[in-house]
Image (tube, rainbow, N blue to C red; front, side, top):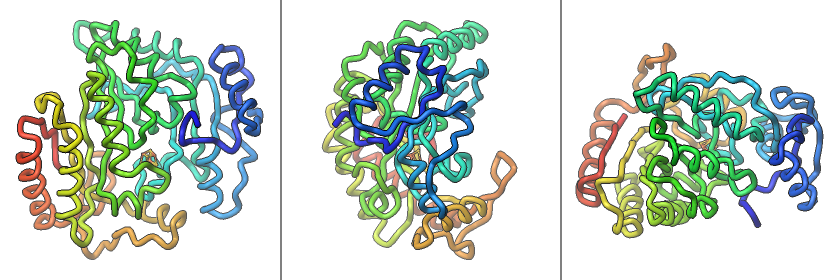
Length: 342
Ligand code: SF4
């Protein structure tokens, strides 16, 4: 199997077939016996089945749309980068608390663009406009781009493009493991690959359709061995029963596998679980039996920087978690950069 993601149906915009990648993908998915459909626009895709919120979500996640990125404008991407690099949207994973869920609509289909070279040419213009400053691009702002990578090789093209850019850097984050096609890419240390990790009980309960911790750590160790700068996002940290032991196991598993890596090249970002009223509504629609802790009475309400409020852990629980992680990281990864704990 090329990827753990095998779509049930693939839509093509007619214009996608004007590009070699579009033609190659159509041939590939036809050979795989996957249903091929046509859509006049990659933004308005009709005919994906699903009459209940759960079915609509599941069918959306099994649908791939192949289109052409027409807008020349890139979205900004503060604080993780200057701009988003638009290559993929959505992802076949079904994490209950997906940070993209509120933006993806009822049928969150996966979308790839075939005009990768045009997107990269545009990225170059953004870099030149900011010269002599270095410009950072984020490849996972609206997606997890790894599950489709074995089909499109878009990340590989971007990595090799940025390897030649004095003024550009690239980064993306993933929970997935299809990294093999990236290992031989010429990257010159200009792309940072981050892995989003969690302890196995959280992965099993809430991150449906994603690889387990050991598989993610294995993928990270391969990427580290290929010389990429790597980072880890531990998110969302959920203070479920026995959380200390579970997150200790996570960091021990990680330390075992990537002990060879220069700790000064590692970074960590730590994010405790939070939810907005809107996200809670959506999650309980798609996952009516969820036991994800979203009890407002046990949380603190906090106004976010983007104007909407969210429920975070109260200060005492959050402080306890911060201290605990600080200790674990100092023991297992002295020298690694801890970018933030929120
Ligand atoms: Fe969302 Fe990331 Fe989970 Fe995909 S892997 S569903 S993008 S949180």
